[in-house]
Length: 223
Image 1 (cartoon, rainbow, N blue to C red):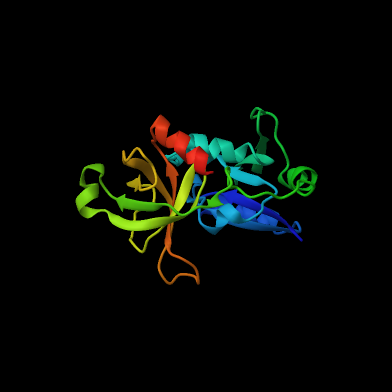
Image 2: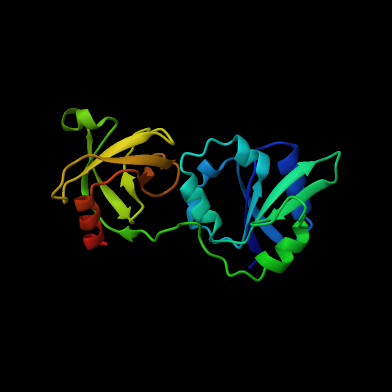
């Protein structure tokens, strides 16, 4: 099986240059335009390394920088810069300085190829069905929330069955019927699978943004 890498870079000359250099190596590459686009099927795909365009990261208003850092720490990662007038592609390994240039091909062959692939998912989700209310505002849960269920849950987030067009990176609220504490739990929508896109359940993948101590303890008792 070919080594598979994830490239985080906006569309443009830099991404094209990186893909051109990588095409000369025997690797497969997936691209996302922002760290906040890391979701859906990409979470489940095993990767052997991350390549990160520095200007993309600087311009990105990441919704959850701690999540991004946790992901990066799980893989060999190389920060990249591209300037057609000053040397083309420059690589900088984590912990290095701008003077410690790293060759992209050398990094891939020496660090990514030998690295056992793993998925981006930080915490393993378990098949766990909770009866929940899903709504856009905590004060209107009783009147307007959608009655639905979770499909899987981890200590960091959950996948909720829904055909609603919830907005990526927007907050939503969840009330879990099985929890003693019915305080609405704030979620952040990380990705969405629309009805009919693929032959599987529609819904949203979301991370827990707030939870009471009692809710967290109950969640762990179920997990």
